Amino acid sequence: MSKKWPEVKNFYPTNPEKYIGDLTNIKMRSSWEIKFAKYCDTNPSVLKWNSEDIRIPYWSTLENKQRTYHLDFIVTMVTVDGPRTYLIEIKPYNQTIKPEMKRGKKQQTYLTECQTYQLNIDKWRAANEWAKSYGYTFIVLTEEQLYGKNIKKKK
Image 1: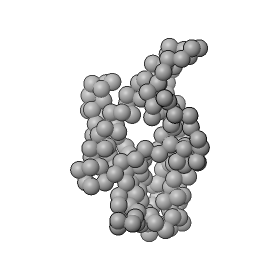
Image 2: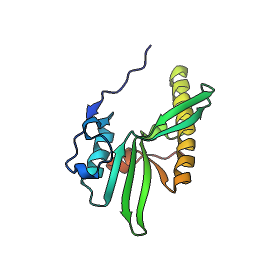
Image 3: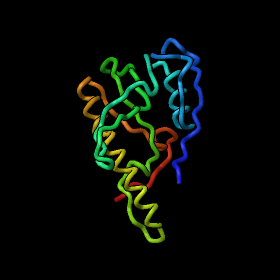
């Protein structure tokens, strides 16, 4: 079974002066990314932003080889301490926690969830180190931050 890739949509900012990069090639891969792009575009606290131009090398423990992580966003914002730059990844909450083999779950589903989780951990470790080396902060945003949804946390 081949992997189904998300539909890519173009994004056109209303404040193009804030976008760093090619304005004719802003690609969004989910409605969550579109929501965050609109936030970056319209929020006065956001000084500049970019989507998918940051590429971070990382070691894939699943494939035992070097890969490249295409980060979702880089955003520079005004904070009480002055401008700060954040590397932002948008992910569903269930991909940010270690999977559990629950009753009724198919083993193949569990294995796929484990692979996704490990892939994310590898990417995020590299992104965190890369961010720190530049004085940036790496953050993973989920539907909880994007939509204010309460998510049951694992105990």
